[in-house]
Length: 301
Image (cartoon, rainbow, N blue to C red; front, side, top):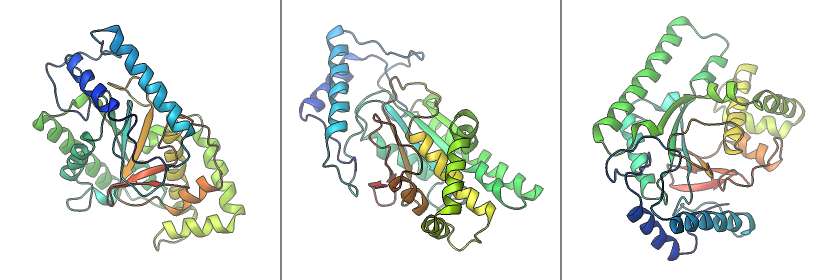
């Protein structure tokens, strides 16, 4: 869908250089430190009004281009992340252990990978733990809950230590959240979940897609709710239907969800059949996610 995004080159590249030359102490969660740290100001302050106007004009052209370009295709890497926004890393509890794709060292490598794709100096990162979803199981023993608590605490602590030790990124631009944050802070979650439950009961094909996403687990209410909550939360994030903590983000243009694997079948079906409303016209990645394993953007359509 929205891939290989490089706007007005080489003009864009040249302006990006001008931005770096005329900004003092402006940092991104995913950009190398350029100088002394500056306290969190929502607007970093260009040295000249001309540069400020140039940036606003460039972002306006970018949004116009996104809206009217019909030739974007899925299955390609993203060259540049234009404008400011959020990289949202969806973290599966089963993958947090060493060597399973999302341990702290591998997450840090992902951050370095996306650094080269950023075009502006105002971006935040969300580490989104699927923690709350695991309590959909029929019975979560006390010891299992303790184990999950310790797992998420150890992982987030190791990430914080790694980011602090490397001194390459701005620690305050990283936000550690669980799916429950979206459930509690978006007024749309309840209605969206109800729409998905209704579709699951009435649409046999939708049930088939959900069953595939369970990968051998029993098709019961607990496991169905697990999948539906995941679909609802991802949709809310992409559609700008929940506010996210912000440190460096100014206009929140794009939100890119990234995960080491493909989109789940139920989510793809939901998008294609518009079970949930699709109203966002700003986020270029509202209809897909970045597959970290294949290094491509995958459209849901």
